[in-house]
Amino acid sequence: MSEKKVSEAIEFRRSVRIFDDEKDIDSALVKKCLEQAILAPNSSNLQLWEFYHVTSNEEIKKIAKACF
Image (cartoon, helix red, strand yellow):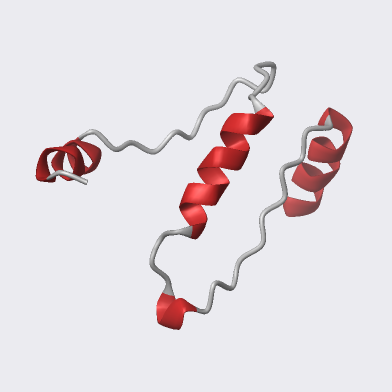
């Protein structure tokens, strides 16, 4: 990655905290993002993570209820 791309990624990063729950997200795009996230550095290369791509609105509501 070039210095310019790294600089742009840092400068233009953002945290999104408001989401449109009616908008569909392309599963292929989610898969690609997760594949790239797995490549990120982590402590001692332990890779202690699990990802769940939940697409069912009913399941999402159950998970949200359990979280709050």
